[in-house]
Length: 384
Image 1 (spheres, rainbow, N blue to C red):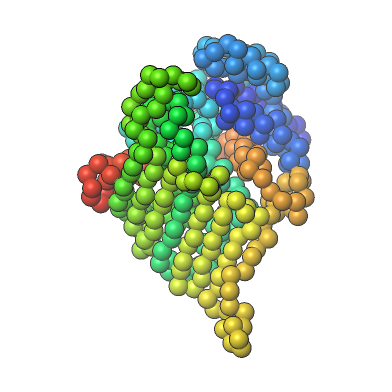
Image 2 (tube, rainbow, N blue to C red; image 1 turned 60 degrees about the vertical axis):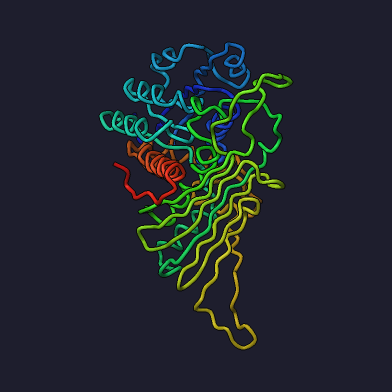
């Protein structure tokens, strides 16, 4: 292939619910948002447990639909597997994919527990697979700028942080059971579903934790088996988890994740306080990063003290061409940026971040959190 020839990458998606469609949207639009695109993307195959769900993918540009996962792995024109299935299926799907020579893009969390996560990472090490987690919030321009500020020493010594990810979708006690409420299929509750994202951001900005203390609560103990059903099932996963973390850099902070936070939508907030400065971010106000420089003069009458609103908006670096930097940003744009980064890594042959090992590190934090909630004690990291 000549230097000017663009490589073609075929996509196979396993799981075609909400997140499968989001991944499809990203792949289908990378070339519109980045010029030049690192590769030509071809939507090849979609696999789900139910034929009618898989065939929806045919309406969205895929060439074939199947209920047999092996048919994705057997196709030579499929180079990338996007893993969009419930958590209990991830391990086998990912290991089979990398062993079949596919690159993998996996939605969060990586696995059902740390043991499974380690097996997946170990399997990938023995292959040439390029792998990445769907931790798309790293790819918000405000978070990218926050990372730069932290690395430049803008904050100085970090004292503390506060992070939270709040939803309200499970307040209704009549909302029926689903795989996300079933420990055997989901592995965990709010801490898995939302905590995986916010814990990745904590790692991204502040590095590794050295100990964790956690409390969890399940407020709705039973739910209907199905809509309108009188038969109920016991709920064994958390609605709310509150963590305290001591970081290796000396900082201490809290992480709260809830699926019963009345009045919230997709509320992810993070605040970091250091000796020299502070930064704050609110996902519901995603065009801005707020930064406080403690070195600004305070006189006369306040001088220039105060939080500065940095207009990160859609200021993605080249070769981003859509949308213009001044246009307000949205949730799907982060996914496109994440998938562009992954595709670029596939073409270059280098594993980037956040990769499966990052997913494993988040899995370790979540497992430590559940161990702490069960024991009522601080849990030291790394877990043995």
